[in-house]
Length: 210
Image (cartoon, rainbow, N blue to C red; front, side, top):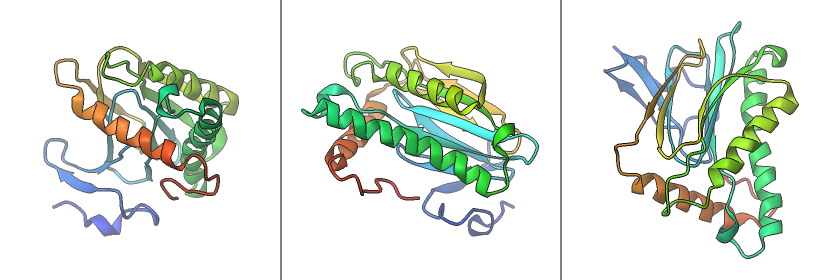
């Protein structure tokens, strides 16, 4: 029998959807755009990516890790590009800092952290304008600056991805979805970007909470 959902999650992640997956014989936590999740349990963290990036970061000795899911805005989403760029950089830093700080607060050690990165696709003419490349460059630079080794990646291309991350071991299962329609992924990312643009003028707004 699966473990009770409420018994094995860290405080602050109660709103993250979690369910028992019979195929993987595991509890699975689903992370949507603008969210992150961390765990030291024998469970999987799932997300679906288009232009977005997911950084999977973990401490291999302590067996604790997490996954975030973020997307930097494109130019045409807002007239004031310079203001929006400034905000998006703050949010990109926020997405990474929250995950890394959360792992450390739960017992992980910064100098042991390892990372795997995924996403950053260009999904064609319906997609956001090549923002995937900016996302890839951002996450690579951020992790290099922080001294966190990227030991694997699957980024770029023209296909959405499904990612399953095991936070105890760092194991990742990736499925490319080249044969599936991408409209739902594009729609989800568009709604996420519009939410970022709507709130970018208020520097005190916590878009997605701690």
